[in-house]
Structures are given as structure tokens and as C-alpha cells.
Image (tube, rainbow, N blue to C red; front, top):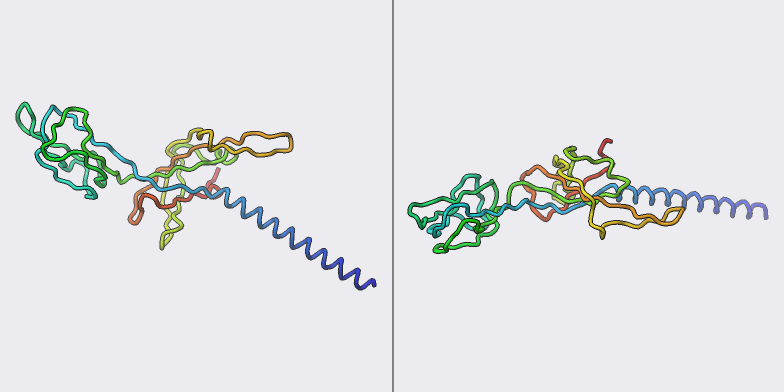
Length: 210
């Protein structure tokens, strides 16, 4: 009888110890998940606005998807007052959209194209309890875990602002409930070969020194 009781007690202790270990591992996994913030890689867009006197488009030197350099001539315009004017690319990047065609009349302030700049960023939502790890102009490592060869790229905190109300969380504390504020953090990211808008970018807050 004593042997059976001892056996049952031993089994109970093993179960309790195992449960505690699983709970600790589960808590650690949740903590790691909370510290790893993911966002979608985006490319900055620049709208090219015609800023010269009225004229007519006579030639377009680029097509959607073309890679362009800053200062490259994109459009030739015949001015109504005589002579010609060039519309130049304001940045390095890709032509994302062209909204005019040869023969179109242009006046000052009209948009003519959109350039996708070679400048990337991602937006993260960070809890109030973690935001002290970040500050504007602070360097961070940005990982791209789903590339065939996972990459790590240098990034910089560009801005921090209060997140929209829908991004706030409500947590239960021992004394009633309190809103846990969220913050919108924009990370500027260096451009490297292989990065494309739409990829998943990840920042591990636990790797950032306070």
C-alpha cells in the first residue's frame, strides 16, 4: 500500500514539474513573440508635378517599370510661348505610373508620373511597455526572415507617434482595467539587392539596448 502511495505521489510530482516547465516555456514563447514586431516593407513614392509654363507633351522617354536615375529626362514638352522644356526624374527609382500621353496639354501643378524611390520603410505597432527601447534616429537591425537567404539590414527609427485608437489594447490588471497604449513606429531601411515592397520585415525589440 505504501509503495502504491509513494508511486502515485511520484507521478503527481512529475506531472506538476512537467506542467510548470511547459508553462514557463509557453510564457517565454509568448514573451518572444511580443518582442518581435513585424511589418510590411514599403517603398516611398514621389509624385512628379509639372512646374513650368503651359505646354504640350511631345515625347515620353520612359515606361512603367523602367529604372530611372535622378535628373534623367522623362518627358519633353513644347511650350505654348515657344521653346521646349524637360521634365526630369527627381530621384533614383522605378516608374510606377504615368498619367499623361503625347499630345496632352499641361499646365503648372499637373501630376505627370509617380516614381517608386529606392528608399524603403516599414511601420510597426509597439506597446507602451516596450516603446522606451526606441527613439527617433536610433539604429536598429531589421530582419527579413522569409527570404531564401534570410537577410539582416540596417534601419533607423524615422518617427514615433501615438497609434490610432483601433490599435490600442485593453489589458486586465489586478485593480480593474486600463488601456495599454500602442505607438506607431516608422523604420527607414537601407536598400539592398533582393528587397521588394510587400516583404515581411521584423525587428526584435529584445536585441535593442536601452
